[in-house]
Length: 74
View 1 (tube, rainbow, N blue to C red):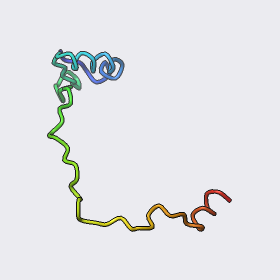
View 2: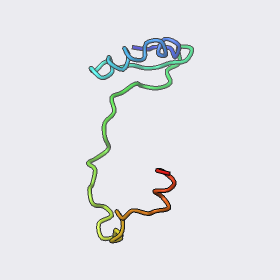
View 3: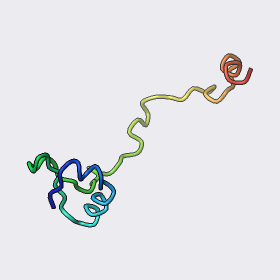
């Protein structure tokens, strides 16, 4: 399905739903195809712990600071 930009703007939600369900959507300008509307596919798995061992959290990380408290609560 080829859709011009103005029509795509007016019907974006509908077109997204169609693309999500497998329909091929091409967005065009003056009937010249520009881009395909496709479902997002993640590039890979997220890796947890990439910074493990590269920094240390200070012991006083959660301690209150009177200067910061004064900025927010006074």
